[in-house]
Length: 473
Length: 105
Image 1: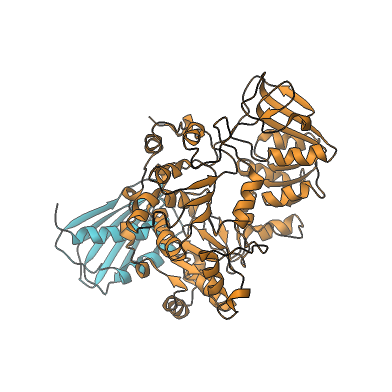
Image 2: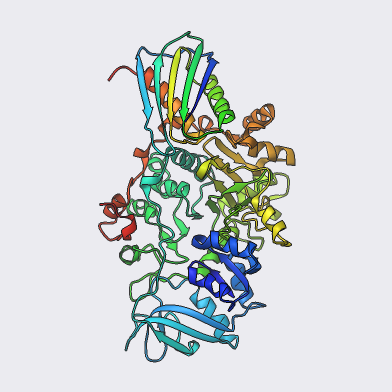
């Protein structure tokens, strides 16, 4: 089975019943615990955990699907498909299967005379199954502002003032955690006060995060291209076709392969959260009992070695990493930022001596540990204690102490070399809140442009329709 | 419930005249810190009552850092902890000190 998102229990049932044996995938979020159990239990043989773009690439080389099962909103009598806002991986899967000699089977809610727009041409589709009901979509990108904590707000303030401002980051991708949700909600307040509107965060490769609504409404954003859609955002996106890519029918056209390519080549920054970071700066979301996969993070969170176009942030980061090379032949650097609190859920430290991904690789005898973002791609780490700029580190030792220096009260943090950390701070390798003129006591929830899902709905003029699980009114 | 008591040297005496201040709320992952003026001006006593066992070393580190960085001399702080992470603990302690520096509302 080659499948980018293994997110429904039924997907894993195929391995229990013996229909599938070997799995190559990218993301398993909601099934992360069960997939771990089945890997350890030997029911699933792991090919590899890929980044999306990497798996898509293999569809055309050595993992070409023979049978593709896809979902769409509707089909016409010629087999043309309308996927609606959730086009996502479908064009890529269909391209590989259909032109690679395979069979494409589409599940649609209804067969109609005329579809709103053709997302998949009918001559690439071999069978259509009418189900009579819409396909299921999980709201994966909705973060309730009510759950954002003060330390998360502090990390967001540090990122905006300590990274977005000095690098002038206009083209970027945000991860899906609460820290980046806090950044999105601070743009119209904290960001506005810093005079950053129009100077940062104007172009995104990003799903339609509900927490982006206040910034969009305040006029911050010029354009967003989406990997996929988000439940409840359909009407809002339709109304903001000036910002989002939409079809002639008015609804969102998402495309994961194109958006991942945009994130890799045309964005100057990736900022996202992780569960574990080691002393070199490798990060991973694998824990002892969960294998969530990477999704797009390793692709977005890596330096595109094929990039050739300059931009301010990319050149500045490149110069910081390598001040001595002549500018015309010096590669720039993508800003790859890991952001989070030093302790995560259940008081688990984000900084560890050894990644759980390494134990997993040993247990399953894998050649390669599932590292999400490699150390040599990571440029900054932001915690409530401050920002570590790894581009400015000149030795392994400096790098380790820069990481320890923002690791707070974790064991890794408490074992820092205090003198060396102070020297790194004097050089600006480590920046504390006070070095950036930020008082941690100002990290208040009143800074959030929306403090609840209801606020987001109101900010959208009632166009955002939150799924019922997020409604408490 | 585990109770911990730290009697720490506090180089910076507390400012202001307010007698008592309260920061935070008791909730899962949060805590309540009751700050009162009591004891010697160069000491700070912190009493912790916590549902999360086995984190004494972490409390030691967080409270030692707190008295170094804030004007906490002459304060007695009672913490009712709902399993807050160290970042929240530091924040609530700092908020408590700031509140007791302010005039009575």
